[in-house]
Amino acid sequence: MTTPITIATRESRLALWQAEHVQARLANELGLTATLLGMTTRGDQILDRTLSKVGGKGLFVKELETALAEGRAQLAVHSLKDVPMELPDGFTLAAVLEREDPRDAFVSNDFASLAELPQGAVVGSSSLRRVTQLLSLRPDLRVEPLRGNLDTRLRKLDEGGYHAIVLAAAGLKRLGLAHRVRALFEVDQMLPCAGQGALGLEIRADDPALADALAKLAHTPTQLACEAERAVSRALGGSCSLPLAAHARWQGGTLCLDAALGHAEAHTSPLLRSSVAADVGDVAAARVLGRQAAERLRELGAGSYLPG
Ligand SMILES: NCc1[nH]cc(CCC(=O)O)c1CC(=O)O
Image (tube, rainbow, N blue to C red; front, side, top):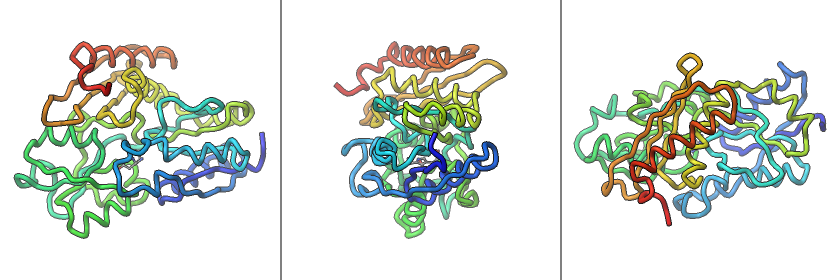
C-alpha cells in the first residue's frame, strides 16, 4: 500500500465534500494520511446534451480510473449512483459507506410541495427516472431539462426558469443546503436510483493492502442494500439511460427491495413496479434478490421497455 494515499476526485463542491469526508475518516479511524488530486471529467464538461446520449454516467468516473491505473492516485471517491454497474477490469469497489438520506427532494421558491404546483407547472430534471415518476404522479406537468452540478441547478431555479426542481436530498444535506428542501418525496412516491445517497470507494484490484484497510470503513447494511439495487439494473442490461429506480431498506434482518421501470416515452406506457423481500446475509444473497426484482419486472412486460 502506497502512503500517503492520493484520492482522485472531481472538483464539484459535492465531490470535494465527499473526498474530504473520506480523507477525514482515513485519518481519524485508520490513522492514514491522504491528499486530494482534483480533476475535471468529461461528464463535468458536457453540460448541453443529455448524458445518456454521449456515453452515460461512466463519463464521471473514467478520468479518475485513469489516474488510478497510472498510479497518480490510489483511491477514487464516487457517489455510488454515478458508478457504472460493471467496473472495467483491474478496478474494484473496496467499500460502500453508510448511506445519507436516499430520498429525492422537492425544491422550489414558491411552492411547498408537488401537490401545490399549479396545472402545467414547469419542473426541472434531466433524470429519466425522475421524469417518468413525476409524470406518473402529475401528468399535467411540463418537465424541462436541467443539468449541471447542484449549485448550477439551484441557480437556474433561482433565475426563474422553473417552478420547481427535483434533487437528491443527500447532496443538499452534505453541502449545508438542507434549507432549500421544501418537501421530501417518500420513497413509494419517487423511488430513488440504485445507490442514491451512498459513497463508493474505488481502487485498483491489485492493491489488497488498501482494500483491507478500507474494508474497516464499510457499512455492511448499506453495502448489501446497494448490491441488491445495483443487481436489478445489471439484470436489465445495466444501462444508465433506463428510467429505472431501485431502493432497498432493512426491516430487521429482512431486506425489502422496491423497483420501478418507466418507459423512455413516459406518456405511452405505465410505470412497472415490483416489491420483493428476503433475509439477506451476504452479497450473493443480495444479488439474488436484485435479479428476482428484475425477473418480476420482466414478467410485467419490461421487455418492451428495454432498448433493442
Ligand atoms: N447525478 C448527479 C448526482 N450524483 C450524486 C448526487 C447526489 C448525492 C447522492 O445521491 O449520493 C447527484 C445530484 C442529484 O442527483 O441531485
